[in-house]
Image 1 (cartoon, helix red, strand yellow):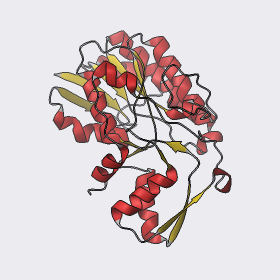
Image 2 (cartoon, one colour; image 1 turned 135 degrees about the horizontal axis):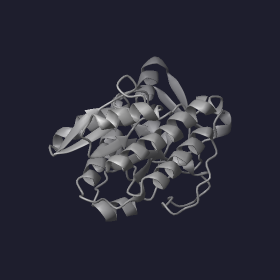
Image 3 (tube, rainbow, N blue to C red; image 1 turned 180 degrees about the vertical axis):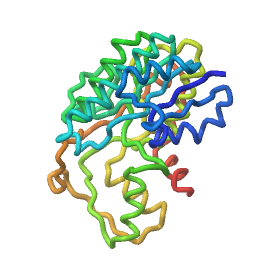
Image 4 (cartoon, one colour; image 1 turned 60 degrees about the vertical axis):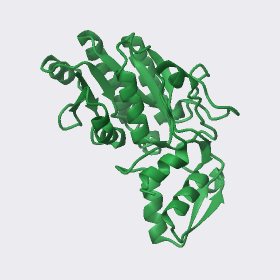
Amino acid sequence: MKKILVTGAKGQLGQALQAVSSRFPECSLILTDREELDITNADAINEFFAGQEIDAVVNCAAYTAVDKAETDEETAFQLNFQAPLFLAEAAQAKGCAFIQVSTDYVFDGRNCRPYTEEDETSPQSIYGASKLRGEAAVMGTHPGAIVIRTSWLYSRYGVNFALRMQELMKEKESLNVVFDQTGTPTYAPDLAAAIFTILQHEAPEAGVYHFSNEGVASWYDFAVAIRELTGAACKVFPITSEQFPTPAQRPAYSVLNKGKIKATFGVEIPYWKDSLAVCLGK
């Protein structure tokens, strides 16, 4: 049985890994969050690793407050760069596999076709820059590491667009949602299942991979689908990004090409609307 250390176990992906773990009985999870393990402290990490039998690490912990990061750069880089570096160093020393979860925000969003893993990165926000720095730190420290970039993560847990839209649709008669930012929603349990599939390989091929659900949507499309599936009476109107300014710049286009992860690991990826229906129990 593989023993997998999960950091950020109380976050969306951490909870999703727990939820789907019963489908992968050959894996046993060691669940940690900030209370059990301070991943910004290299000594604490090394002490924890010394006292545990660990076969693989999945780093789900991250600073994800995209707008707040613009004025809290130090904390963003501490969690998204330094912490992954410390974890990768410990995993490499112990001979553990390592998976780092990253983001579509490493791109500038100016593409007109889905981004591949070989496309040039150019983050336009502190959040994106900190995650890209974390990718480089992990890959430079742990030769066998895998980085998975994902986008628009949502689930039944935590804070995310799908849950927030459901709340707002109960409270308001109408909502304005941005339509000129295009990407793909990713249901956290689908990503969790893909991670387990990768970990089932004895020697998974290192490198950067992309994962999101299949298909393309704007935030407006995402909101309309939520309204339709829940039967909410709330009206949803499309607006531009200029009409809804935010401190951090979002990629206008961040659709990810998943060909590499599908070909390498045989990962099957559901269509985004199908997964949204599963999430909403429809």
